Image (cartoon, rainbow, N blue to C red; front, top):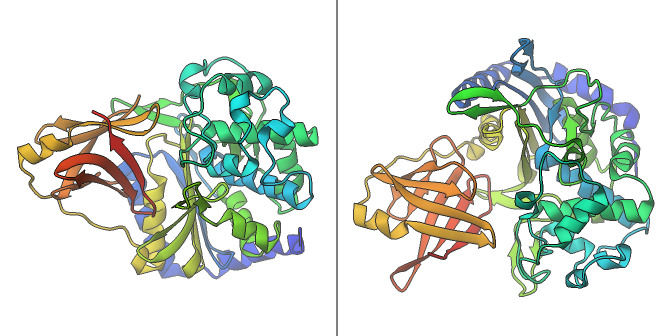
Length: 450
């Protein structure tokens, strides 16, 4: 069942657009236009599908501010980590072909792998449980070109954050190594295999690996806000935009075809999809809300399979509300954009139970706020500092900018305009941890270290 419906994709798309409910279209347009103005996003494209059929496909704002080019459903955005689901799908296709196994050890295919990697499996890499450190991006020069082997050596030079399978910790390095592994096993660059095995078969005609050199029609410019002023994206070396952790060009139309293929089982066998969308089990028997290239959670009782991406002036999000047979894709060209919030807001217009939660700020005594101040660690090198800001608190990730936290309960805070809550946890009267809870589902806990 690789590609039984390729010839039906275009009729499905045209039929879906033709049957778009007019009243709902206006409501969605009003919401998206208001939200990108509020977030100061130059441009965005969205796709909304039901049971794999398109019900909304549109662009908003500007793909390029300098040339005043409008965004459309064919505007090409960078994927960020939304690209990980394509890498994971390619791995599963190779598993189905017998070229890889989920329990293969990385060292079996990479002869010069360090001894510390001897227990890392393909499954660990897919689920962010390998222990490979994400700190490599603090170590390398983002403006220097690296070969795959050089990048692998930089990753190998860092100690593991934890024994494989002990914990879950998001690791771009793990997906970089999946790209290296795919190349070693097949003798073909992973980007070429994506085109051959995924993009071409399902008609994703403009999806491809990033290239700053190539002429790419309809390519959006990426932007960032610096002290409130819109600037062009930061430049990174071309080789760092070819790695398997999320370095793709995609359009909303491409993503609509992708969702149709997922919903109608056009690429993978059902058992492979089940594995991809099952939360990973850790060594101690507990689970983490991540499968293979997808976050697997629930939001207010509704199952959600989703992923976000952010890179080089772009932000993206895909959310598949399984119980509601509803999928929302949002692509934006601003690094500080919150496409997840836009996706949740759109979903709520189709299913009211999915609508964003409204929080009302309350007053909290200074002595209570002071107890929460400190540094919290998710994993070595992955920390967030909680500081006092005015009469409240602020959260500042390592190397990032602070965001004001507003209390809606004594130990629970929200970020204005973001679908996330911060909850401080106590044991025996002492604050011991911080739990970050995206309202799109799931949570991530950091222990207080000072």
